[in-house]
Length: 135
Image 1 (cartoon, rainbow, N blue to C red):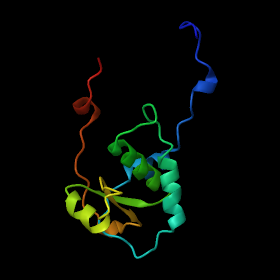
Image 2: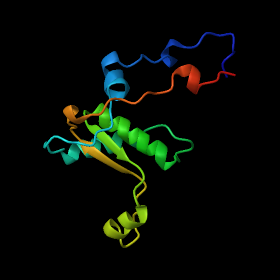
Image 3: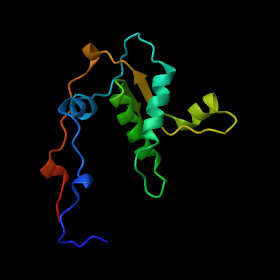
Image 4: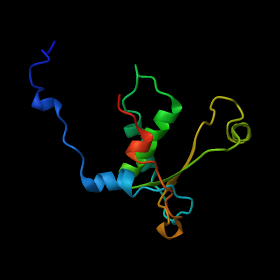
């Protein structure tokens, strides 16, 4: 066990990702609802899933919403745009696409290459002071 007075190993300190990567994942990322007519290779979808499943979890179990967030970040990291949706009728979707009950829907997320000319203005977000309390 490390003595608290000892300095952290430099090997434990990670290098931040580039500003361009942060832009792609967060600052310039938008939820798309209109798409360019470009096909998405199945191998790219597979790669997004493989990245998402490696995200940190609590005892290798994670809620679906956390797994969905990892998937969206993985897809964006690979150059895809995302259009996650909520408010859908899960029972109707399950009846239509998964009638045998083996699978159940808990997220809908369009993936592809979004049409930037069809984006709406970005809605305001809470700033740090509005969203956080440091104890």
